[in-house]
Image 1 (tube, protein in one colour):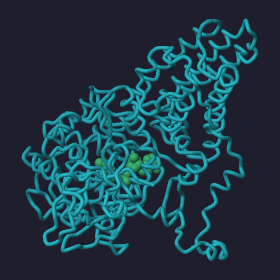
Image 2: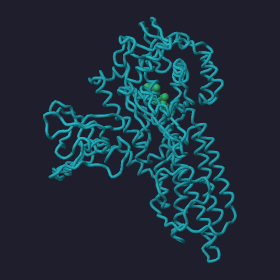
Image 3: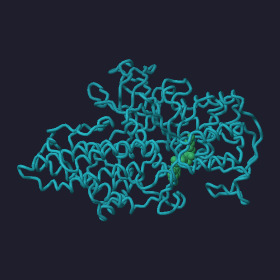
Image 4: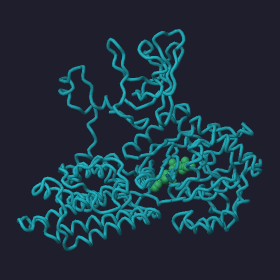
Length: 638
Ligand code: MSP
């Protein structure tokens, strides 16, 4: 199987994730899902960037130790990814041991390349960017071009990487590989930046304490950007050059927004060149998301209210809107009125109605999938469009043209609607015309089956909903299943359900948008009436229950009842102490999937820290709660 490795940036944890981050992760998710359905062996990485002065400062502001602060913030990202149906294979945290070990190996190799030297640095520094800006890029006022804040003059002893040495090689690589940097304007920007000459970059900070010390001089902390870039390899197991690393490096796609292309398209490849390692194939930078024409800004309170918009329109509509509305690579202005318009026009009318109409007619006249016995006008046109759509889609996905890809799929959806209209299928319910009616409806159903696969990378839940109504298996149905027309089994009983995109009127919108009443505002009477042994749903929601796997188990010395377990939660590993020694031997637990309460305060039991609790039936005997079938580690349980 061909490997496909796609990454997102690892996001700073000194703020909660917002729609800008969501945009990148949705785009990467679409690529990952598309390639899985195309039969690739996919690895999809996302994660968080937890080191550096900014994170340290935010932790201090909250009165927390940096690690505790990161532990609090990282789940805000995983929670959002879950809500958005992001199918990443790993959520990397830069405070994880695997990453730290990988970074040490990476820095040791970089130093051994001979391209690292020590010098004193003086320059204009932006703390929020964690970056020095060269004099030539600044105006008189010395303002950060990204944050528009005054820069600080910083002087410190740093280690440097000889980036300047790679100027020529970078230039030729970018010129010779037009798809290395996507889109064209971004490539040109970088080429002219390169022409102006590259300066060496510092790779350490002596004034920062929250980070990874350089293995060859621990008084210096690795510059957060250098450490962060290497995550794309450390996440694969670069440290041990694991099988996964061998399979997936170099990355196929590093997805990001245009703000961080320089780091990815210049510094990162140059360091890889120094290490004689292969370069990533595509650096894909999308545009900047704004809201009603204004830059997203926490301080100015300008944000995209994902919670409300998703509650109103659903996750798939949100994913669809972001990728359909904006030309991928260019900036995009998020407007609720446009989301609403797209929802009703493209989703409710075009797709929702098609499903409803075809299934309605089949239900009324046939109940089951009819036999396509009687070909007629327009059939060939529809079938030719199926083939064309598949071909076009491949080419568009290869060039990251998600908006045009969706437009192309919708061209097919609309063509089928027109087919139903042109053939006036509903008028064919006479004994002699009935076979033709059956054929047209078969074609309509077959088109819907094909559409369910075409849209699956973009709208996975909707794909499943359509398949459920067609009575077809849900889940990963590869593109090979729709390569030829006619794969829909005949005589299958259809299972028409609720409209997949119900219309949303103003009232519903407002209802969904209004914040839930605060506990204080809740009517008193109700509170008094509720029996004391009931908890509210929001109390229940406070519990963070997750699927985990036991990877090690041993008795706790001096405690007959206790076992010390190491459990893998996907994004992290934890130690949990459980009172199950009388019911389970350590060996039988290894590999078992269990349910862990992850947001309990840690406790120390017989001198051993327990960072969570396992769920178990605790009657006469203790039986661990497990899941009927295995699910990805870290999956939330509700
Ligand atoms: N930690 C670094 C990345 C290191 S990767 C080796 C960083 N983090 S960040 O939290 O600032 O994330 C930047 C990324 O967030 C952008 O490249 C983009 O993916 C996403 N976006 C943040 N705001 C955005 C918009 N307003 N619009 C679109 N994407 C945005 O840089």
